[in-house]
Length: 339
Image 1: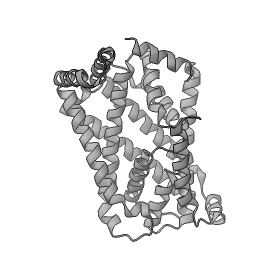
Image 2: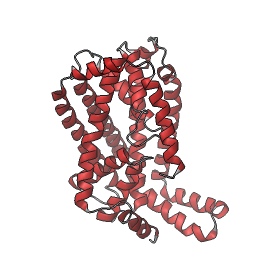
Image 3: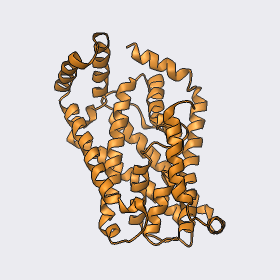
């Protein structure tokens, strides 16, 4: 609570919430919520869980050069990680996932973090693909929202950033010896002597997590799986939309909304992506002519439907494993640093 990152996230969430609440008629939002058929959330939750299984399978694929771990083992750990992202600030669930994997499977934290970073890079590329796929149509729309007005510029910058990181990781994964040589060379100039061996060891462990990128076939498989994952998540957007008879937009519009919302949630915010999820989601729907009260009601229900099931499932698996964030996590970090 005393960390400046936490309070910065709160401030950013409040900033986004200001745009959400400005001019919103709460009576109309409540009327929208009252008229919804919440039975549609059931297939929405189920298809989202299929997407989480697909995420666990993709992680199994990325981890295979380090250690072959069954998808059934990785699914609970994946759920714990997404629970952590939802309740801890700064996407701490990603670190939590790596720490849990270290505790139960003995995989070095730096290696599993490398695979998680690769996941996020591919996710970002797919999200940007969803955005670019709809840019021609979006460019024809007129809307006063600043979020939508800057989508094209942000997408171009984001594409450059994600593709640049991917190329860097591909080169590091394909040429690990040269990468380690470069790390050793630069360490002589910028790393104090007493830390050099530790830094080099971490770099070697991190590179082991990039081993899956050495095969073009594996890269294509990871990319294809990432597309399937995000199409499944867009499927949840579609099922939740069926609960609102007043709302009717195309699946491609929901793909665009999914891409923009998930790119926006990379911005630091309060736990649970408060504001950073809602404001851009409502703005996209408004751009397609959806009434703000209907867009707000739908986005609120969607946010809750995305947050509650995976958070409850992850909390269940974490409680069953006996893991404590403050004690067990720190002990595993110390053990990993000592190697």
